[in-house]
Image 1 (cartoon, rainbow, N blue to C red):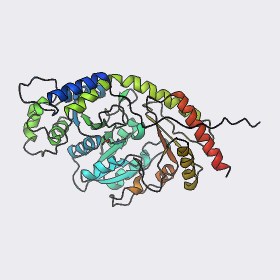
Image 2: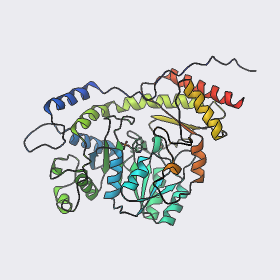
Image 3: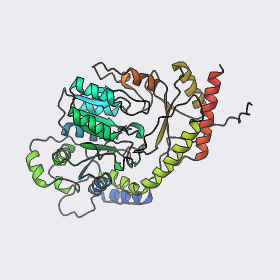
Image 4: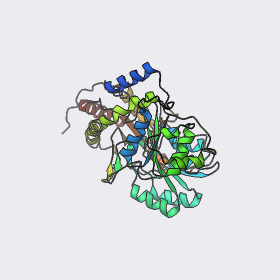
Length: 406
Ligand SMILES: *Cc1c(COP(=O)(O)O)cnc(C)c1O
């Protein structure tokens, strides 16, 4: 029996809505502005609170690592991690191909040559392809991006890296608060990199953090970031003797975090568990609604993955590019703006490997191309409500029906 379709409604929520900055952060940021002391380093004896140092301590604690270095973006954090892990101009660096442009950008910035690895239907790194491309390219580094919060099997990734002599660096821009088998992301590689950009889990507009247990990597990252001779003020750093050996030979790249950014970010760390709960609730709600639509595939998630559902992805595997175009247009005409990775032209934040024209070397990614062609993406900000999930799912279903009946 044909059921009556509900009348279509418009999607009236802005998916780019960030959480407001908490009052404690506003008042500390205001205090800093009144004092004018926005630079992270203090002259000896000024005796003020070191917001950036405290943030570094908190990140080290949260990820179970000995050292943390705050910088001005996750892109800078990834660049520094690669550089400090030994990448030299011309070196091959592996990365999973479902990622954001700053990831191949960081490899390029470090002078590396990206070797992109295929994507599974779960939107994680294809480990067979990783093994094969590691062997073929001789690459000695993997920048693994937990893109849109999808965490690859980190036990298996570490096995593959161990066998191939590959150093793992994690891009955790979307996995602050997430983990694998009880251990936080950022705790698996030689270094982990986090973002404090507005659309990540903690927002100071811009900001990045490198975490590591490697004392030379941490000291070099601090010196490169632009510590001058104030590295002693860092609060999650190696012994001063490590700096003695490196300070004369490490250039200053000026990638520091300002005190203001740390002051805005720190009070949000306490709010993270509640934000994660709200986002995961939205994720599970929308996921179950989308799974009822037969044309839609939602990536499977491993039971060992403790993910943060700050966004949701889905495919419409049977659709052509033209049908996908009609689909996203139908939805956006009704207020639901879907990011679509298959768009022939780059738009917004969304791009894919064949659009990164700065990579000269040919990449073999036929399976990734098929997945990205119909891949859609929606943010799930904590301020969204369950009723918005229902409207979104109804619109998506109506769009698919309308296109199939053409
Ligand atoms: C946002 C993002 C980055 C870059 O972070 P910035 O702080 O903007 O440099 C890197 N990787 C992924 C997966 C991201 O989502």
